[in-house]
Amino acid sequence: MNTGNGRPRPRKSDHVLLVDRRLAPEVAYEICKMDGLHGIPLRDHYGDETAQGLEDITFLTEAGQRGWGVLTQNPRMWQVPQERFRGRAGR
Image (cartoon, rainbow, N blue to C red; front, side, top):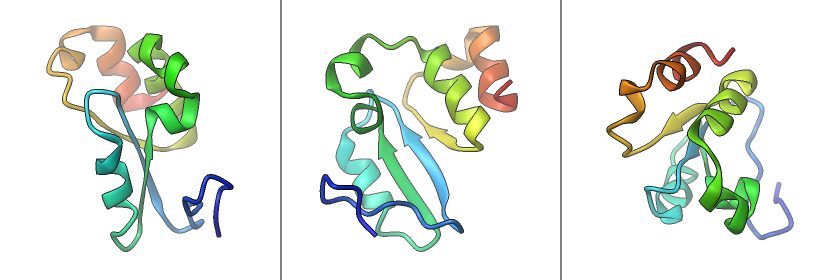
């Protein structure tokens, strides 16, 4: 199955990882090659311009609500209580 931009859609059994803007989109594309995983770059999900200005709390909340994991290189994320909570609970 494919999303119209040439990238496959996640299967129902896939664990989805939202890859934040600190990592190259190619990381997400490589994740898609792994069995049972599907990576989505932040810019592909929200659009490039929106993704650049998006607050971490916004995509962390959405990922949590959807049951997605988040892959990031942001070392400060765990130092911000609201982001740490969203990353764990997604609520």
